[in-house]
Length: 334
Image 1: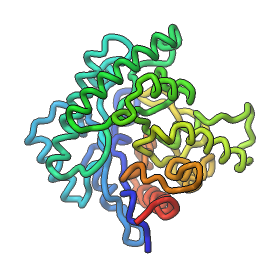
Image 2: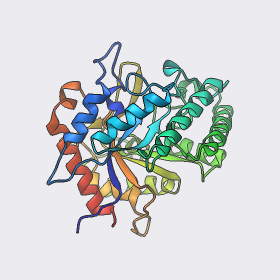
Image 3: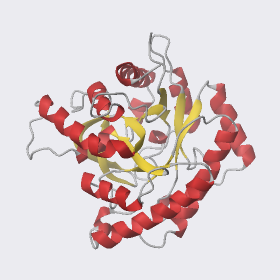
Image 4: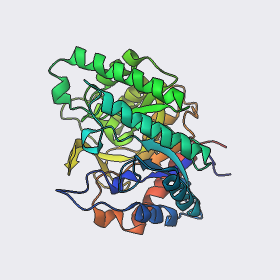
C-alpha cells in the first residue's frame, strides 16, 4: 500500500524569486497553481502549495475578502496551503534582522496573521511561517559576534509574535543570509535564539548541500563519501528541522534578478545533479538510527530560478512529482 504521508506540496515562489527587473518576467499565481494541479503520475497528484506572501501572488496586506478569494481558488484545484514565506527583505517591505528590526517584525506579524486566517478558513491544515535574517553575510562579517546576537534577539521577538498567533517559524539557512551561511553559523544562531518549540530550521536540499563538509576538489563520483558527509551535516540540523524542501543541486551557485547567489536548484533528472534525491532526503526524514521521524506533515519541492521556458512545461512538474512520490515511498508513512 503506498504511503499517504507526508503530503506532497509544490512551492509557488519560483514564479517570483529571481524574476522581475533585470531577469525574466514573473509567473503569475494562477499559472503556477494550474501547473501544480495538472501534474499527475499514476493517478497521484500534488496535495498542496506553499506560498510567498508577496505581490503579485499574495499581497501581504490582503483583506479578509482577498484571502477568501485566494482560499476558494486553491480549494477549487483540490489543493491546500502549507507553509508561507514572510516577505522580510528590504525590497519586499521588510528590513534586516541585524539592526533596527521594526520592519522585519512588522512583516512577520502580518505573515502570521495571514497564516492564522488561512488556518481558520480550513485551507491550511499544517505548515510554518518561513523567515531568514534578511541581511548579507558581508555585512555580518564586519562583526560576527554582534551580528549573530542581534539576529538572535530579533528571532526571539519574532517567536513571541508567532506564538501569539499559534504559528511556528522556520529559519532558512542559505549561503546568502547573514549568520545563516554555513553549518556552524546556522547552529550557533539556532542555539542562541533558543526557542526550539517555536523557531526551527527550514532545510532545503539544494542549499544544505553547500553546508556539507567535503574536501577541497572533492571527487563527486565518490557517492559513499558524499552520502556520509551529507548525513553528518543533516544530523546536526535535523533536531531543529520543522520544514523540508526536496530539491536537486549541481554543487554550484546561482543568482538572478534581485536575488543573491545561492545553491543552484536543478531538475531532478539533471545529469549534473550531485544529490541522490531519495537517499539524501532520508538524511532529513529519518533519524541517525534510520527511524522515520514524522517531523513534518508535508514536504515541498523548491525549484527557484528555473528558466521560465522550463517552468511552463507541464512535463517539468510531472518529473518533479515523480521524485516527490519516490521520496514519500522511501521515507513516508501511513
